[in-house]
Length: 429
Image (cartoon, rainbow, N blue to C red):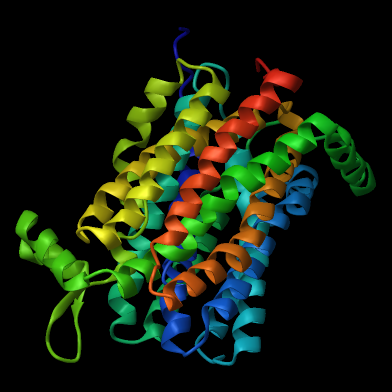
């Protein structure tokens, strides 16, 4: 293997911004199912909000990526913050279903403007010698923010939900300052194409039937169950598992000060684990992602991706089994799911990005978000509603068995697709 090219300064600035954005994003989103239950809304209503939020979060990059390619990453980053900050603060004052849905839709739009810009920066600041490690670092940074956001928000919401929303808004404010003073536009080829030409290029990319079918398969077989995990796992742990016992397990392994960070006392003085503080994969990924990336940079993308789906399916099944056996089994399930995610998610995103020449990095990352948006848009209305049905019938674990089957079916369909249509050819530089 060639000596790796060093990462430039803007690569690290971009990743620091990503940490803060994920801190705000997941600090709000991961516990949102608990928040809506606290306000008295049904799982069907929660599913609608989740689907709208994820649709706008991941459909907007289809367009914002093209604007970033034309006008520059820095300008569009600042625009995203100016949309992000006031909408987060709106959560403090709006409590109706319509108000919450529209506010979350607006936050999703702001997040969608932001999303392709940091991954696009990573794309144009890496080459064939460091691309897998670069995307592994990026994914680890995503999960540092995704880990600390829910922990901080969970502790703050035990006092007041408004405190959690203010903390997220502060994170966006810090991002704005870092971007203004430290982010320098990365060097890349900027074309003089009009926006019409950019949209035409996107149309051409999506007119490739093979590529379009591949994106749809990713949306239905990977992003749909993956987003359902994040939609459901916090509220499932918080409401369906014995969180007192989970706290005692954590407290028996780690110092009390650490277990206290992940928990809060209820009105009777009993300490319980907060669902959102452990019901995600960020804290696992930020420890193991670079190690996993170093292993799988030696292997082809699609076989690695399918292996990740299989391990994630085992994790989903184990999470469901925790309800039938011992609640602490959920830790194993979350860990297995995290391993599957670490193998599959950065690998497939890197794979799609390297189908693009550098001058179209934002465009291709935008089309990649089409698949993510499709899965996200369906995840709430399908699986959150299904979870509500199973929970009402006394079998909340069934939703996790369905999700495991979704992943396994994905392995079969993607294998058949690549056997019939063949794999794509990645760019060399």
